[in-house]
Length: 320
Image (cartoon, rainbow, N blue to C red):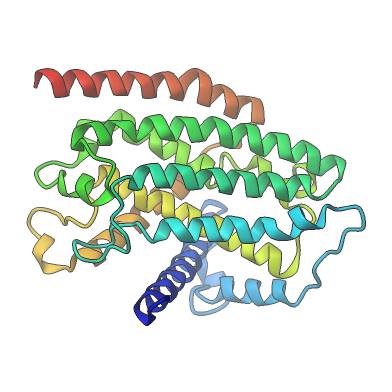
C-alpha cells in the first residue's frame, strides 16, 4: 500500500516540474525578446514575469481540436506520455547532498531509457494526426531525435568512466576536487549541443517550428493538450541542463571560496538555470539549421568527436 510519504514525494516532484517549467518559459521569453532587440519594459508589468501565465490561460480557453481522421489513441495520449516520462526523470536528479528522490545505481541509464518514450510520444503526436504534414513531421522528428539520443549517450560516457559509476550521486561526489568540465571540455560541448537539439531549442527547433509544415509535430494541437506538451518541452530543457550540471559542473558543490555560504540545493539551481540560460542564449545567436544539416552535424561531427572524447578519457585514466 502506498504510504503518505511516497504520495507527498510524488507531489513535491510534480510541483518542482511545474515551477521549473514556468521559469524556463520566462527565461526563454527574456532571452528571445533580448535577441529580437525588444526591451522587457515593453512587456506587461512587472518585467513580463506573468506573461507565460497569461499565455497559458489564453491557450486553456481554446477548444481542443477533434480531428475526424486522426488516430485518437495516439493523438490524445502523446502529451501525457511525454510529460509522465519527463516527470519520472526528475525523481533521480541530485538536488543536494541529502535531497535526492531516488539514487539509482543505474541512474544515467534510466535517464537515457526515458528519452525513448519522449521520442515515441513526439512521433505519435505527429503520426496520430493522420495528415501529410504530420507524416513528414514524424520522420523529421524521429530522425533528429534518434541521432542526438545516440550523440548524448556517447557524450555522457566520459563522466561515467571517470567516476566509475552510473549513479548520479556518485558522479557528483567524484567531482569534489575538480569538476569534469575541466577534464572533459570536449564532452561538455558535445553534450550542450545535443541537449539543445533534444529540447528543440533554436537553432534546432525546425521540427516544431510554426513556419515549417504548419507547426510540425504539434500542428493540430490546441488547448490543454498543447499546454501540456509545451510544459513537457520546457521541463525537458531544464532537465537536460540539470543533468549537465550533475555530470560536468560539480552538481550541488559550490565555488571554492563562497560555497559554504549557500545551501547545496541553491547552488544546484543556480548552476542549472545558468547553464540553461547559456544554452538558450547560444541558440538565439545562431541561424536555424535545416534537417539535413542537423543530421550531418550529429553523424559526421558530434558522434566522431564523442568517440574521440571517450578515447582521450580512457588514455588519461589509464596513464595519469
